Structures are given as C-alpha cells and as structure tokens.
Length: 550
Image (tube, rainbow, N blue to C red; front, side, top):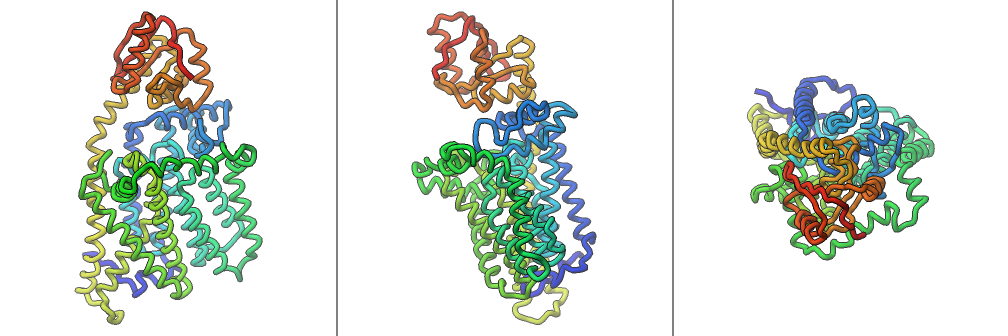
C-alpha cells in the first residue's frame, strides 16, 4: 500500500525544496493524470463541445480580420474592455488552416496545459508532491462550466487562470531562492501581469495579491540584486503587456474608457435583493464555479459544498497568518498560502455583490473561474489538519498505524471532492451526443442560407455572429431586439451592409418573442413574404425590407 509522508507540524511535507528531484513518482503520476485531462479536452474540442456561441464567433471574426491584416482590435468588438489576446493567438492558425472553431480553441487548449503544469509546480512548492498530484487530478476533471471557462474563446477566461498561476509560481520560485533574481525574470512577470490586466479585470484580486508576493520575494532577495533595477524591469514588462489598454484609455473620455465602463457595470446591483445575491454568488456560484455541478444546474446537495469551502478558506487563512513568522522559507510559503486565500475570498465577495450573481447565476458562475488557482491552499489545509490529527502533539516518530490514519484523513475528503467532480464530468460526457446534434443543426442554418443565396440577414444576438463566422463572412448579419429595434451589433460594418441591402432576410429562433413580432410586422405591413423553417428557426424572406426603428 502507498502511504503519504506525514508532514511536519507546519503542514509541509518537505523542509527544503533545494536539490529536490522533480521527475519522481509524484511527478510521473501527475504527468499521466495531466495528459489524461488534456486528452479529454482535446477530444471535446474536436467534437465541437462545448457548444459555440455568438460571443466566441465574435472573437473568431476578430482573429479572421487579424489573419487577413484587415483590423487589429485591442478589445472585444463592441466594447472598451476585455482584450483580444485569444484572437491574436488564433490568427496564425486561421492563416494556416482557415477560420474554424477548432483552430480558435487550440490556443485555449494549450493554455490549459500551461495551467496544469503551473499549478502542479506551485502546489508542490507550497504544500508537497502528493497534494500537487491531487491538484492535477482536480484540474484534469472538467464539468460543463469548467470546460466552457477553459476552452471557449469568448474573452479572457481561458488565459487569466493560467496567467495567474504562472505569476504566483514565478514569485514563489524567487521567494524560495530556487531561481536567481534576474531582471529578465521580473520583466517576464511584469509582461504576463500586463497581458492579464489588458485581457480581463476579473483576475485583479489574484493579480494584486501576486504582486504583493513578488514584492515580498524581492525584499527577501534584496542582498542579491538591485531593487530599483528589478522594479523598473517589472514596470516596463507591465507597460508592454498592457499597452493596448493603456493607449486606448489615455486617448478616450472617461465615460467610454475601460475604467468608466468597469465602474458602471454594477449600476443595477442595488436593484437585486441580498438573498438573490447570496444564493447566486455563494450558494450556487461556488459549487458551479469550481466544477461540482451538472450542465446548467446544481442540485440542492451541491449547494451545501459552499459552506465548507468558505470555512476552509477562513481556517486556512488563520493558520497561514499564524505561520508567517516561521523560518524564512516556510514563512514565505505561508505568505503565498495567505495570498491565495485572500484572492479567493475577494473574488467571491466581488462576484456576490454584483447584479450578475442575482440575475443570471448559472451562466455568470464563469466569473468565479479563477477560484481554481486557490486549490493548493485548500489541499494544504486538509494536509495540515490531518497531520495535526495524527501527531496529537507527539514527537516525529510515526508508526505505520499513524501513517495509515494520516493517509485516510487526507484521502477521504480529497476523494469526496474528486468523486463529485467526476460525476459532474461524466454528466457532461453523457450530453456530448445531444450537443453535437444541436451544433450540426445550427450549422445547417448557415449552409441553407448560403445555398439559397441569402447573404444579408437580420437576426437575434445569439444567432448573428455565429452565422457570420460559420459562413466565413459570406453572410452579414445585423442584430434585432425583440421589439424590432436595433440590437447590439458588435461589428458596425455588418449592420451597414445589411441596411444597404435591397433583399435582407429575417432569421429568428421559434422560441423567441422576436419571431412573433417579425411575423406580425410583416402581416400588418402588407408586404408579401415567404417563410421556411430550418433547424428551429423561421426564415422570413419579404419582398422588401421592413423599416427598423433606431
């Protein structure tokens, strides 16, 4: 039987990481598990799971324009925040292989690989080798919400967690003296943090805390480097990484720049009740956000996991604070652990205060995607408490029976979490055939329109850009609201092209109120039209366009 080494009273299985063999049994096991997680996601990407949407199609269109040299957007089309890093990563693949959803998701798949490697290394440094294996197992599993966050290239989510993991890893390596404090290391840290700052401000809690850990690492190494020199290197890297955002905000009015938009996003939060925010932001948000729930729903028993999660964060933070004055290396590890606790708590609090948590809790659980970065500190808590349970204040000699007790105390809670995640992962796997069928039906809509020669289309938001991307811009689409007014067109040239067309068609899902309004408007206008039904959509072809209110 395989027993875990019982850690010392600090909860760390190793008193030093210097000279530690990295390619040992835990690393090999983690490698196999990580490759399994990567293969699982690669199969999903090839199968077209999770389903794509118009937001991802918008990123795909940006990548297409970049690959053709037509446009180089700094932000997600139609807004002044959320950088387009995913589009720039996918553009070379579009140039080589053409614009497809698979090509768009290949960079996000690679980012997942970076996330796994970074989290294994970070967990190993601040907890131990076998907890690092458990971290990889947690990341290898993937519920519907988790793989959506990691694979769908819809603006920031796939890259912010890997980036945060790398920032914490670099700062930890510096703080433990495992890499020399060179300027290029600090510049790399600044560059990655700048890219994250440009990409999505959702990661700000982790970015800020990682910065504090880096400062602590620099202070710890102050006798081995020039603090002013590495500070300038870090700032320079940050400026380069966030340059698109900085240039835009310095040249635009406050009301339309990233800061103004960010501050106004929660303007409606006061209209939501406290109970709705707690339910959506905590009770449902945490289990959904960390991958415990089935596709689109959390059962009642899933919600109960939010309480031990919050308690675990509080207890881990308390123990980490008490350990800050331990030896140099262990004290620094406790600082990193405390930072991960603080970042997770701030992320949950910020999300629970938002209107999104109350109004769209299932889909908005993506805002809690960075919580996976704090996985090591939860495992460290289990590791530490189990060690204290076994030792009960005794000396360092540990009998076989006590080793067994420790192993049981660690594996039972970790195994319970992994089992719940495995059930959620299997729930997604069971839905793959239905998702593929639905995607094929939606793809047939674009093929039908192209076959009919319909190149200019009015449709709802979630149909428009998906149609355009699928048709490689052979179809141009303008968005309509349910009341037939102009909707949110992320790329204005498409709207102008459709409005100038003499024979646009109207493509509307049968389930939307817009369908009835289009039919009623055509009936009352006296305009002759024909209608076809394809893939759950009604396609109205009028003799002349309907007037669209502005």
